[in-house]
Image 1 (tube, rainbow, N blue to C red):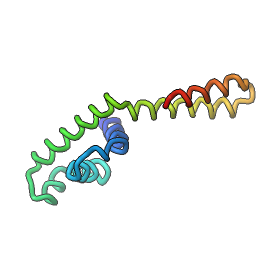
Image 2: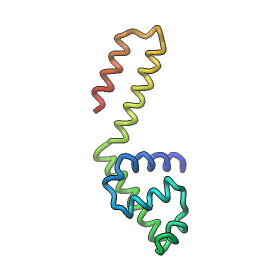
Image 3: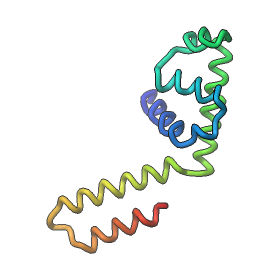
Length: 111
């Protein structure tokens, strides 16, 4: 579960980091990408662990709100699923050209 949350936060951060402040971006990078502890981040910024924790939790909530409204990660996942199906269809000699074209159309529509 923790790995799933970390992976999701990393994706959401990739998609929406431009919408964050420099401080929010920095805390998220240190915590999620560099795997620093709250204490290490707090020490770097000379603030309390609680302040770092609160900032990270608020930023996570903001990222989830952005995703709820913009759905960039959801659309990315859908495109990845269709690409996987298309790859499998191309590798499967029994699949028809119609199946392949239908999958290509799904990709076009996902934007």
